[in-house]
Image (tube, rainbow, N blue to C red; front, side, top):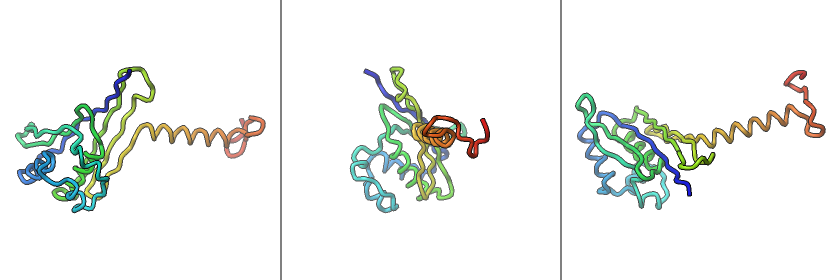
Length: 166
């Protein structure tokens, strides 16, 4: 049986005392996560709030003696949780900033579907995610469309159309 693992590591740099208090309240579960999201207008399914936060975190001392928030994967993580927390944080404290992170998917067996990754880009107004599997599928669809246009479906001969003469 293969083991699948997703990992990432990222920071929010230079956390102020007020930001740390807010983050601690929500990450340690002292705050009501569902009402926080509702207050900020972030739509989340109720069941996502049950295991929040589904990622590792800690406050770290930076090289310049500042406090940084480290975010990472433990046994598992839900990138949506990271995105929602960071969006709420940016809305409240840093509306002009952006946050990005990447993750990697691995597998203990050589299974093609077990490898890949993705990325998040978060601002105060939204969360965008990217998955390598989606990108690869998109490239396959584009290739298939090009091949269908380039070759006549009836006899398999090149269709000179807009591709020129073979």
